[in-house]
Image (cartoon, rainbow, N blue to C red; front, side, top):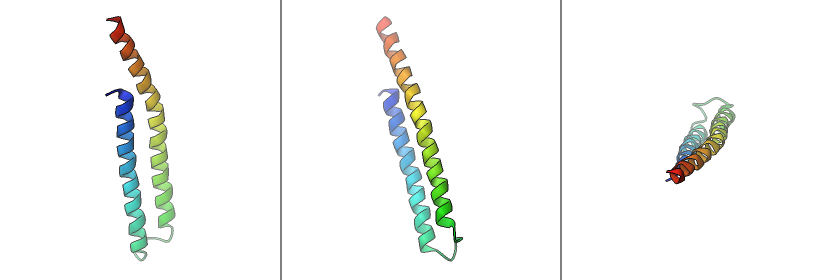
Length: 80
């Protein structure tokens, strides 16, 4: 499996876990309005959105690094 494929698989799994945490916290806030602050939903949305967006941006950069490493490995393999 190429490094690009492994990176994509890892990013999908991590993003799914973060989305699950976001879903859990949003449901918790709706089910327990007396246990959370009034701006709980907004804070959770901003925090989780920033975390997921930041990770996706980092994954985008890492994808290009993995693609370069895959190309280098393919070139080294053909030279030998």
